Amino acid sequence: MADINPVVQAARDERLKEAGLLTKLMRRPELGAFMGVVIVTVFFVAVANPVMFELAGIMNFMAPAAQLGILAIGAALLMVGGEFDLSVGSMVAFTGLIFAACVVTLGISLPLAILLTLAFAAAMGFANGQIVIHTGLPSFIVTLAFLFILRGLSLVGLKWATGGATQLRGVREAATDSPLESFFYEIFAGDAFEGLFTWLAANDWIAKFPNGQPKVTGVPIEILWFVAVSGLAAFLLTRTRYGNWIFASGGDANAARNSGVPVRRVKTSLFMLTAVCAAIVAVLTVLDSGSTDARRGFQKEFEAIIAAVIGGCLLTGGYGSAIGAALGAVIFGMVLIGLTYTTIDQDWYLVFLGAMLLMAVFFNNIIRKRVTGER
Image (cartoon, rainbow, N blue to C red; front, side, top):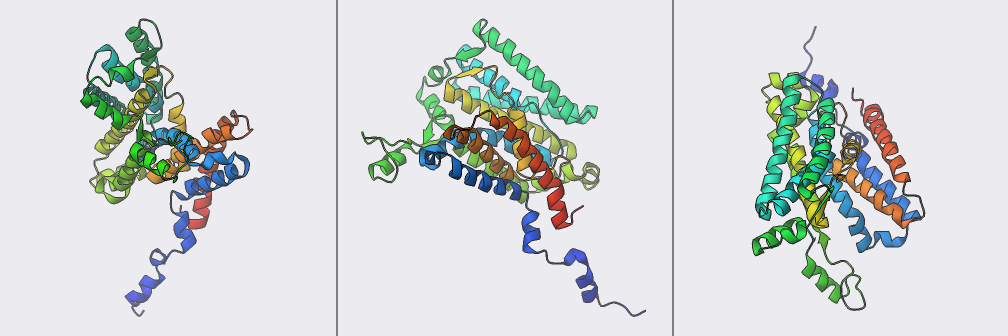
């Protein structure tokens, strides 16, 4: 039999076929979330008060979207790595307690309190990861247990710190006692670019009150944190060796381990990263409101996972996108706040959560496979 020309053989190899535009688009994890943003935007443009899409309205729904987005990005990276963390909502409450107690009860300076809070969160994430790795228990079960443990500790700790109450106040006043503390306060609370927005209002670029003050005084600081975390996570996941390790660990841990990937260290670091994201949200929300309470972060673990799934993360691991998770969080923010601009009962938001989860899983696991031929 005559030898087959290598060029001809390569041309016949399906693996070397040029994928079509539709196939390339359907392979993008962010596609479902992008389509969701478009659909939700069109819906609210049609039924909501036009004020929703003015500058003030956009800032209004982007603020909660940013807080959820930071949690969702951490959850997304962990899901790509093949694990879950159901304790992030309770982690927000407990690290919020740690932070507030450091500032108000113990009188620790704001920079050190923030550092201690992030370090404590990383330690809790490390504990989660080590329990999962060394016991072989599903991360779903381990972190579900910590969901209740941390929520209970938040209640007990708040009662101890306040003498019986479930809310600790006075954080804002205690956090701005010195110029250094005021500097760090502005990094984690308030609005950014206030001078720019004042100038824009003075030159009639944005809406202003009759006294000349801008209706939007600046960009809420959590939005800038959201953008920074999104960009860093996207770069980490798609442009670094560590990102390749995350995909490999979630896709096939045994194969990744045999290829030299430090699977245990990768998964432990992802649990730590997810906990740190929760602590960042805790610091942002506590400084913004000036207090902390036991219900802070309630059910945010489920919203974060749903946002990650909407963003293209597979429940089986090894596939997903940080940008997709960020878009998923924007959808949540638009619906949560957008309903207040309509005559629709806000309790439909819960229906939306379940419906979006089902549609996202359907899209990720069925539609994409049919179009791309993936197995």
